[in-house]
Length: 426
Image 1 (cartoon, rainbow, N blue to C red):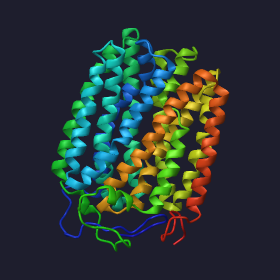
Image 2: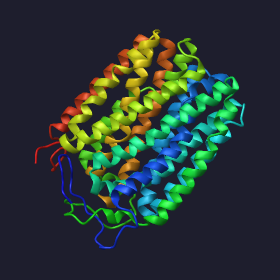
Image 3: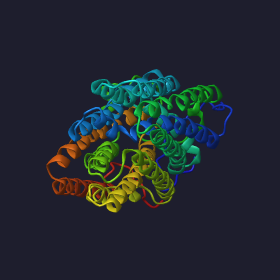
Image 4: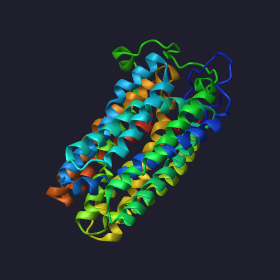
């Protein structure tokens, strides 16, 4: 397998057997279709999480904590699901179970009028993502080894975000038609959820062993090709360059507000009506997809240096998004969408280039745990500082992103252990 800038050779499947009935690109596209349908469900719900919880009596702090804990659940619990997926080798089972939990939890939100129940369901939906994500990312990484890591993850993310566009727009349409009745707007999401679950089961039948996309290449020193149980020792033996990279990602997320807090501001400050918030969210998802494709292509060409855009732009988001001016607040949300696109595509692609298949689900789980702790802190920090002082929120976020930028510069300059950093000239 050819290695481009920022790519690391990793051991693949040596059986010589075909992975299934689909080419690598077709697998990426169909898996993107699964993600697209699932995104219609949970992004449709997330687009109104802030106003919905406020409707049930939540404060800005409660919204920040719940959405932050939800993101933490979606990420920290991968520290368990990732190693278990590596241990069992049943990546499809974990992916299907996670999608099932998500597509059941969201419609149930439309049936509750109790705040604590709604909070529990929001967290449950995020737990579904924790269950499936390390296995899903690992399955996708095998096909992306053929298509190009950056491009494969970017195309998947672009399709994923098509659902993130349709879901909020569908919710906005139902809210407008029902006079801001959240129940029907959430219940309608059961339909795409059922389709997503059916499609992922079909894809598993078509490609039972995606690891076979990743053809045999020379192993990195110390890389393991077996499926031994990845316990605490395995986690500790993940490459040093991976840990440095996870630290950078965690810092960027600590200074990254959730959309729940952003949307709370938009509605509580009287900048937008509740029915318009999902439309703005949909626009942010379009920008998300475009940013994913652009940075994915740039990553395959130039390497991890493209990630400099994350801390630089993230420092600007709160200064714009929490403004009292509609135009500036909308611009901040759009930038927030661009950053989300980079986080959901290129950050993941880099992990696949840093860790071989034998420990990759474990690596994705650990990476998610690091980012998850940061997400919980970021949600609570944004919600708490928003109620205290917006200028202080802007200053703290800027300081965190400055530190993150320093870590990234150090990484790109070569502190990756025995290997060249992503982006080094071949």
